[in-house]
View 1: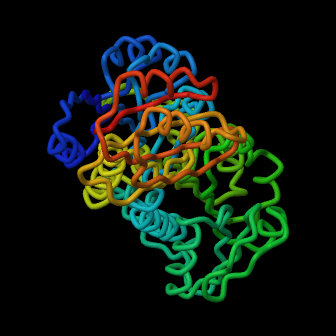
View 2: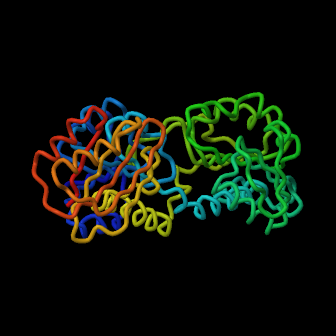
Length: 398
């Protein structure tokens, strides 16, 4: 079993996989489609962060691949449908870097509201600019959060601890934390927010989510943060509103096009503008977060290899079967059609194979069946299961 880890995945992930007897290779940067297709030959497990795109074409050529781990929150860099069709599980870390992103958002909104970036730049240039003009406390100001998931809701709690009023908008019905107030639309939120912070996911429908009409609707002198996905914001429109002074400042951590590797050149329409904080997609890049992500996703990949557990997979049915000691385990991914379980069991019965435990879960077009059998089995059992027209992928785990 071989694993390829890209983009400086934390060393703990390597240690977890190696402890399970998996051979691990690492590379520092992201790979393009051609490079990735070549690198995945003979590789069963792939670990990436946000810079590598695992496309349908890549997956079609990755004949040995059984699982992908995205060592981050997002999974939009992976074609999840194509992966599911090939029986390739995808795992992510939906909670591990939440605190790190929230702390950066808080730090940036304080810096922007106090104008600290401009004051720091002035001092670096030898200019003493001691003034309270345009500088405000966070207490009593209104934070508008667009996207109230794991990060947005935790940001809500900590912002209230600073004395802020919090309003939020989410397309899903979310339980407000503390005294936060749900708004009926983004426009309603923009009418009252002094600080607007985006925390939406990477689904394709969010492309261009925040455009010229939204910046125009923001309150004069408000500040804007995006620590979610680069493609959700029209950065040219944002730059225009910074230049005009309508928006007092912005902090951007994600960009529509990001360099593949450390040290690569970077360009943005926001460079050189006043009271603008640009960070290189480091919202979750703390040592604590990366260590926890390495452990979490590494564990998921290791469990999927060893026991077939697909718990918290983002694209396959989530199935887990306890026990199995002294047994052989069959992991059968199949199209979600009636009668598959009965067919599998009839095949086993026809070959005098006793079933010791089973777990079946379905999701959309797929079903995932784990079966523990207590006796040795003949090769024709596996052949019969593979010949089933519903079979997408069959793995024999022990």
